[in-house]
Image (cartoon, rainbow, N blue to C red; front, side):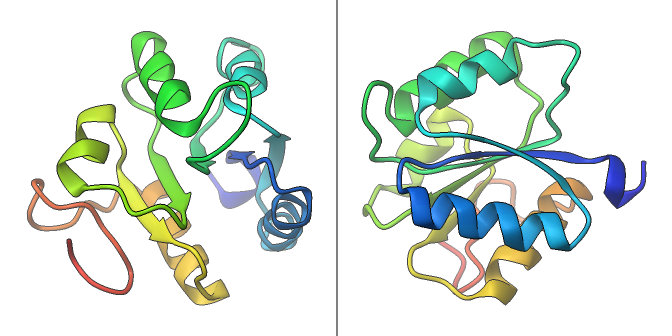
Length: 139
């Protein structure tokens, strides 16, 4: 599957940040869809006609937060890689138990975002499956 056919779902309540991520990833060739909270994101995840290859989700959001969203997602799909993109400090064991594949801490730079997206979409796993990838450090 080439880059142009891979679809990324951005789940972020901050409008400006969400639009920035959509623009960055869209200009690199990905198909990008967006949701402003976990509940709206679940509509995409349940749509079999619009398969999602990767999810980038915030943690603190109204209506359905990142934890609730990821836990509900895992009930219907355990395979979609999820990048938790957050400024919140959450323990690694906690996010692993939700089914998070990668962790990006806000703020981060463009290179960190694209590196993590590339790793997730190419199923590159870190050597130690008990760690979560963080481009700044292994946690």
